[in-house]
Length: 141
Image (cartoon, rainbow, N blue to C red):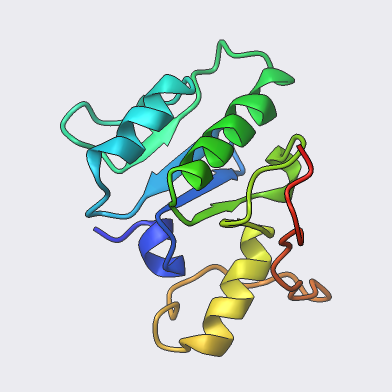
């Protein structure tokens, strides 16, 4: 089964889905280090048998969810992995290998680049611009 990370060509995609749950999707062949970082940041596997899908438990307060997601993105970036993260989950600086872009914008960009790769993807909202990758020129920590 393909994940969002597989579809977008990243190592991990961190998004807030329509059910308000923050999820992290690893690529299907993700190294164990990615799984370790996600667990360390509070994500739990949806399936205990080597799942590629993680989520933040519902008992984590809403204000702490973006902090956990941003921490995971920054740690994965520091380890050299490419991470896509929803802009609503970014708190502070997340790293040079992090792509800060809404899922709808990523889907639209993926369709333009690989039209056949996302044939089953959800429709993009009309009027949603496809933003460029947001990457700071230098670290500002």
